[in-house]
Amino acid sequence: MTLSVVIPVYNSEATVGPLVERLQDCLRAVDFEVVLVNDGSRDNSEAAVYALADRYANVRGLSLRRNFGEFNAVLCGLAHTSGEYVAIIDDDFQNPPEAILTLLETAQRGDFDVVYSRYVDKQHDWFRNLGSQWLNYLTTYLLGKPKSLYLSSFKLINRAVVDEIVAYAGPFPYIDALIFRVTRNVASVEVPHMPRHLGESNYTLSKLASLFLNVLFGYATLPLRVFAAIGLVLFGVSVNLGLILLLGWGLNWFTLTGWVVVLWAVLLVAGLQMLFLAVLSEYIGKLFLAQSGLKPYVVKGRKDVR
Image 1 (cartoon, rainbow, N blue to C red):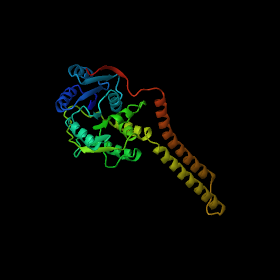
Image 2: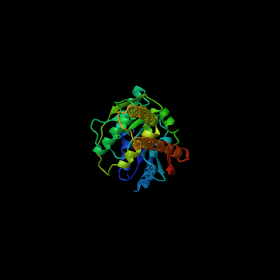
Image 3: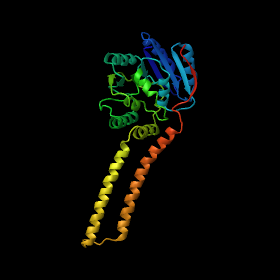
Image 4: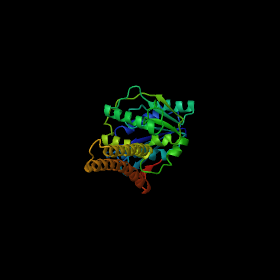
């Protein structure tokens, strides 16, 4: 099979059907399958996913037992694909399905492992755009991605990289971080980005903050190194300042009272401890959950490609 299309579905009973119908039309020249993953939707998306799996022989429907999050749903979908290339597309029609062919042609022509989409004019609201911008800055320095590359959720990945990604067994998958742990042979191609016609974005401040912290503490040791450097600098400054205070007191430059020294030392040490404990707690929490046997997703039911 040439192509698999993974679609994470969340509260999209009104759009998932038309999206699959459009995929059947625009990809008819390609041997492809569609993998729908219902991520614990609160509406009738689960029934819609199963109905589409019954209707089309090349559609597989999966439903998770609860809402695990977009990346977990995508990871589940990737694990159930068989195509030589796998496209990931959202269920909101902001990415036209026809653009999948553009990604596929770019990957085949340039022999790229991954092809990301990029937009001239993004139709997300300002809040989503701001969050994406900050996340791209973060991933540039933590993951070593090219500065000019925009990490879009709409992308195409070849089979070899997909097989490496699905080997991840922790509860906090971030697909782009897993990609850059495997390959740097990536490209991007311009595709249209359409306004959202139905529903509203599921990205909230808490979800963006959670993703930011997941990338910061789950896929890089840079925060530890930064705070270690800060600790060394502050330790050096405190030692030098202590010597200056001691020298000034010995040469009678000023009167040094004990409570001033104690207060300075206590505030410095307490501040450092709070900073380091905050960072350490993030890592310990991630390690605990990763080693506790929590799965990135749990499949409730499925209907396979016929």
